[in-house]
Image 1: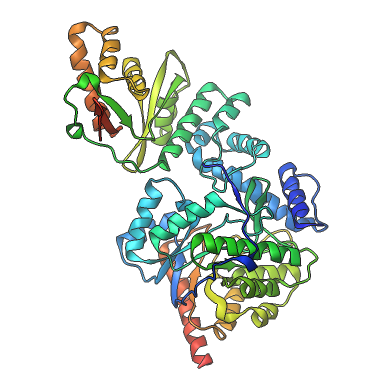
Image 2 (image 1 turned 120 degrees about the vertical axis):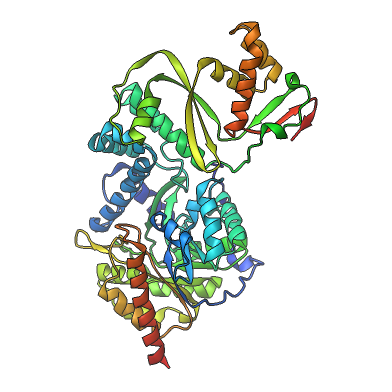
Length: 248
Length: 295
């Protein structure tokens, strides 16, 4: 048997857990346990709060089922389980569980994200703010939640009893990012989320203000926009800004 | 994650890169794990070097690299990988090698090591150290991959004997296979004494085959660890203190070796750092006694 054929048969047997490809099955069972155990352990590491919410046994059952159908295609397990939140929902878990899992995964993603320093508002070389556009740090992600998953996640992280899951009357947006070395998330008021989403898509600050003017009285636009701008910088979201061709 | 691209190198005979000599380093260290980060950073510990798992730091950024920067200012460093897949029939992953090179260039390790095993095929990664048949074909594959890795990394590779739980028909013993790899590629050896005990016990082999066959002048590092007993097999779990058979074999090797780096590898049931430092003192005691015997 060629080495290639041996390897393909061996991996095939690990994936389906079926017939050992070798006469002595004892050693093969060690590797089968290592393979599946390694994937499940990676999920347990990333989805710590999801496991607390589901309970150890139910999480283990879900994780094993996921591992059986989702081999790893990367040499690192850091990103393994990116589709686990969707899998949970398809497998009968509640939407709140899937959304808690999304927060777990997004925070893990931010943990390993690129080191890109943020800048302070005072370092933004902009004279005409209406023309300013922003470059956000690469770990920033926005996601809409339909349940109180953010509150549940925070309670679980604090080792407090998780509140009952409820469906929100209006979806909420969470922002996940990393500030310095610490991954974070925050639930945003819908207007703030829309403004940030606009700015992240490349809109000028002037365009953001115009949109804001459709939501609040004209007299309040400047104050609200200023508050938003300070928050983006104070929270370490902005890595650069530019206006009229200038950039830093 | 960048897409994996196989890197199938030239046959090693055609390689223009002759690996440079790797100086020996005599010292005692630990495999650094997360529970001990604070201990090694808050006070200078009696460690000549620490070894870290390369893949844990082959990331875009964040806390792991930040911690490693601090560790490196205090300790010598060895990079130890688990995913190079030296037994890959379709060649090594160029993206993997590029990221490992970046890490090595940034942190200037004593050396870069990985295992004589395979970890996956056709783009599927098992994240396990799978056994190779010790055949001529496997020797050609692994030797070619080592040469590719050495060229990509710009330094000689150090390769480790794995624990094995099953064996295949092959023309060579594991020790002969390792010796031939060194001769063909100029690579060096990381001798895992626990893995020898595990493999020899599981396959009913004599440890003397390793003692008598391995080229001792190529050994740059030694791993010491514990194992557990599975279903009729010893399993390399790294979750227990170094047991007597491992200490005994370590002493026998140390009588034959020149300057070498020794470390304790612990991955499960991780005890307080002080417990591992006590184990390391036992290694120092044995190494000292062996040196006196050799003299």
